[in-house]
Amino acid sequence: MAKKVVATLKTSTGKSFAKVIRMVRSEKTGAYMFKEEVVPSDNVQEYLKKK
Image (tube, rainbow, N blue to C red; front, side, top):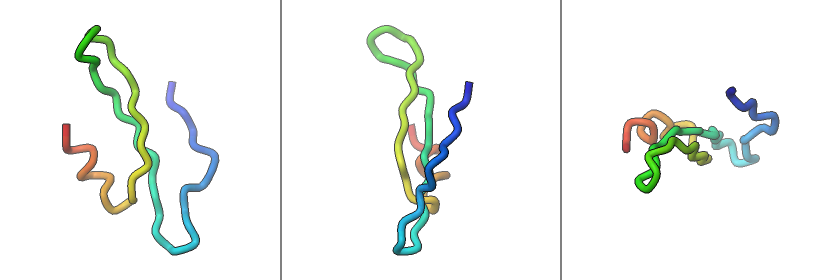
């Protein structure tokens, strides 16, 4: 199930942010985990491309 972000991630300086949730595989167990980070809206695509 997807989570819905209720709070706005916008600051008063005009720069907007986005909450990115990525699924990563654990090195130890091999199970999938969810990693959440708040990144600037400009860098979302770059963040998702890197491993």
